[in-house]
Image (cartoon, rainbow, N blue to C red; front, side):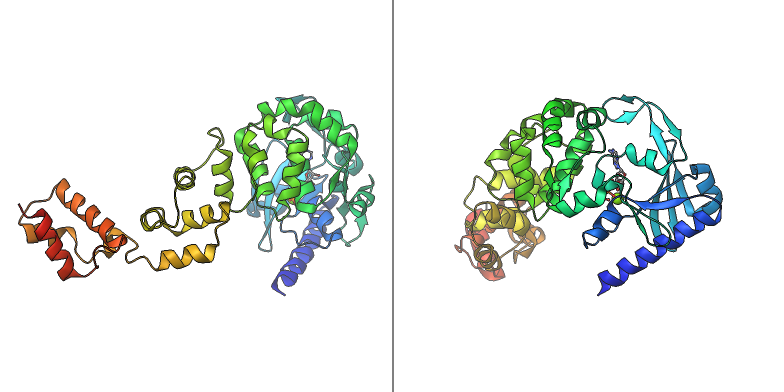
Length: 372
Ligand code: ATP
Ligand code: MG
């Protein structure tokens, strides 16, 4: 119910925003994903607006609510609490670096603006009255669940190689098919993917790998040889796509960007994959998240692993009934590496049920084995 209310709020607010731009003498439309997703009756959170107002006009209209505007003709505006991307109608000159046009010119024609876009299904527009405008045949593609480029496929992918990954991502997330033209053009241009930043590649791949329809997306990636072009040759060996870091651990590629924490988790998952995860020390050492990811990959029931984990007598070194200070007092020794060694020894003995985790038993054990 909330989703519906939010969607309606977003829809109503978007139309008000268009009206506001029109009241200043410009034309403006919702374009792309939002209208496409409305047609498909699926929720969409991101609204893109296209207009003949320039970024400067947009700034004049929305003033401090215009958060940014770029030389590429896009502005970010917050209107009635919702954030919108507003882009000025433009035509694009030659492309450079297989990603960005060398120059833009602002134009006055919606149809010309739609022609610079990637896929026909992404050219559906909506007016401030809520009427759908379909100048390039988007509706037919959406109804047939097909992806065609706007104009020549070879040219579209060679101009901007990111579009290859957008095509696969949309096909996956929306469960659409790629037209033969699109497939052929991808095969001819995929070698250009080496020019695209790993950041960009990763953000599209993440959307594919976390989609409910991932199996289909991966089938497309493999069918088109994109595993090689994206330097993820292990893709063909992955049987099951669960946790995203689990997937990257299996892909085992050092080139894609991760935060320090993510890198650490990926390393732990890779390590734990080589171990017996029913072993108490492994469960304790790697913790529940890594264990769940590995259980999922190894097809071990998660319930069984949760049960084993919950049964561990200690979950961290701080759970040991004796701490470093207790040991120093007990043995009358100073701080030093011996304390850590003793704690590690206790950890091990407790986990393998060779010692009970109560103060008295632990004290006895420490005195017996470590008293000088
Ligand atoms: P979603 O927001 O659901 O991911 P979208 O279609 O709205 O999908 P955006 O990335 O928000 O995609 O872009 C908005 C619109 O801008 C697209 O629908 C498309 O018309 C156009 N567009 C975006 N990226 C490109 C590109 N690389 N080349 C050409 N047109 C593009
Ligand atoms: Mg969008």
